[in-house]
Image (cartoon, rainbow, N blue to C red; front, side, top):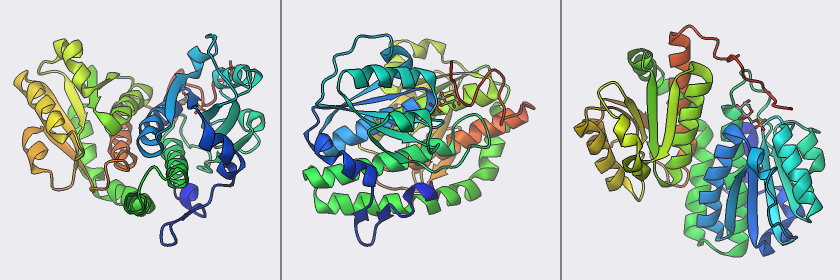
Length: 347
Ligand code: F1P
């Protein structure tokens, strides 16, 4: 993540350098629509980017699973900009989806880790996340790095389109610049507590992850990480969607992980937590520092520093990655090489 920000963001000077974005700036400024195409964890980064770009830039965004998009006959025009997100830059479904879109005239912006990879070569412009090769198969730091770049793009476009005011721009930029240090602090300060939580729940058969707004994609990503490296069945849901089905699963054996950092909908998430507690579910919550309300309701908490709600997901994903890691370790699994999972899904 530090590499993703270094040289691209100068919070003091309020300056963002992204030469790839400059290359397609006119297309972006006039875009009818941004279509984000990705798979797996990269898709979750795309989903969060949808929330952020729509909020800050007021551009219509759609997020597509490349693995489905490639089999559809989507309506794409030269007014569409496609953002392709891929850690490896080689994911076959994403590549085919892009080739199809390119034939219809779309401009493609590639966001990949690997310099010279197939997706990078197919793109009209792009940015490298430079998150280095992941040691493990499951995507963790690539996710954070993808988000860092997507946030920079959103902020840059929002400022040029004047869809946010200078005060908000400055606040978001300043909070984004703090993220590398805050991630470091979370890893240090929460490590022991998260390890203990992992030991407590390592034998659970199923987990439910809930979040709302900017925290919803993080709930999905938390559930995916647990599946990938701990082999525990986990579902991520929008918090309010719980009443439309998953609530039937709740009993004393179901750990429910809430991504519950302070945001505009905080009261709603508090009442969702109460609903789970009333049904004897066990609540693990990611909370903002100083949130005594959720700390008082939840069985276990993982604490992150408070930043603007738009930036908060960059922090709240960290304890969830660590929780999955420690549950996997507790179960004696090789968390770096999960069974059945390939680093690049090229077929
Ligand atoms: C997408 C992805 C990863 C996942 C695993 C399989 O890869 O689903 O998110 O952790 O490695 O592939 P990519 O297109 O981002 O390289």
